[in-house]
Image (cartoon, one colour):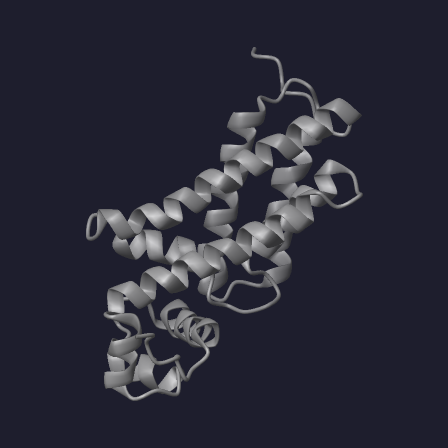
Length: 198
């Protein structure tokens, strides 16, 4: 006998839960707040998603999928590699759209040392971002837009670290224009040769 069809939009509910978790963090979000955001009774929320932890994992996975899609679009745009990197970096840090920072970064900080399995989810996103940055840097080196002396993997890691730091600063209310300039500085450094050691 087939089960009864769900009478709610699961994708919309996960998106609504993501907004709450993103704004308040995992620990500070209550089941009642999630139920209200999803427009569901608390019992129905648990029937649909089993637990707060499971709903959080679904929300974080949906966020990661969205970020990777946006990252791919930005980095594969028909523009010089430095422009693509800056556009992607600003998008990842959430500049200009909100002051919640990066959901993955917030979650990684909150869950580090608390829930290693759940903390692996944002770490996987960071690894994917690094790989995408590195490939864009290689493309820039082939086109001559990025100096050959830069190691793509190391430069990608440095850029990711800058994005994460800027994301945290964005959450403190720093001026988005100033934060954009910081990211632009990090990207423009790739266009210059690596200084020779003294």
